Image 1 (spheres, rainbow, N blue to C red):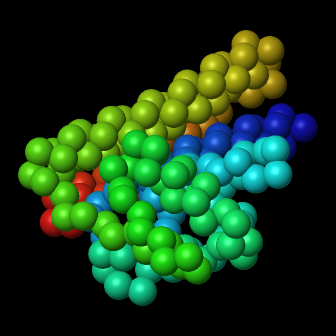
Image 2: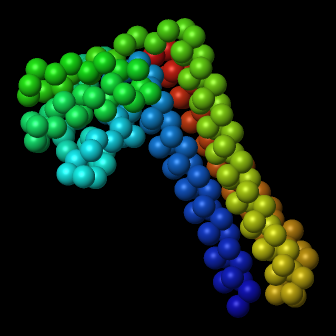
Image 3: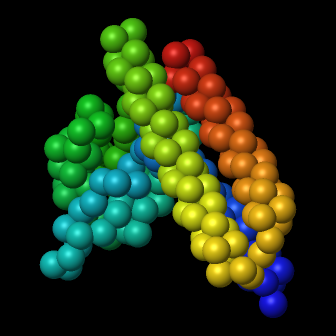
Length: 189
């Protein structure tokens, strides 16, 4: 039945748009704001028994203070490797080890660095908007092919295109809200 096909098509488009927002949220979690957030270490990997693994798979990471992360490796022999991995990452962090615990002070961001991060926030938001618009374009193309096949009428095509546009607008608004919140977080730090 065409209505089931259209319903699935619109549902799939919505799901893909939701995924685009989830990707944006994940990308934003990697942007350092001057506050301690364990997620900033998610991309840092450490060689562990011949393989590379994220720090969170070999240690517990905490944020006991607004400007401090603590890392407690389960295997104390990894302390030097974890420290070296953080130091050599592009995060600009300088971990300090006492033999059992690694402390990672989060330095105050400079005004220049805040502006760079704000530009990155804008760029990531635009990538999210583009992803949502691409989903819209694909859904509309599929609807048009259904109309050409005679599976839906021209009126149905327009009605369903409006549904897809409303979904798109809703998700673009969510992206704008995320962008504003992250930009404010970066600039205030």
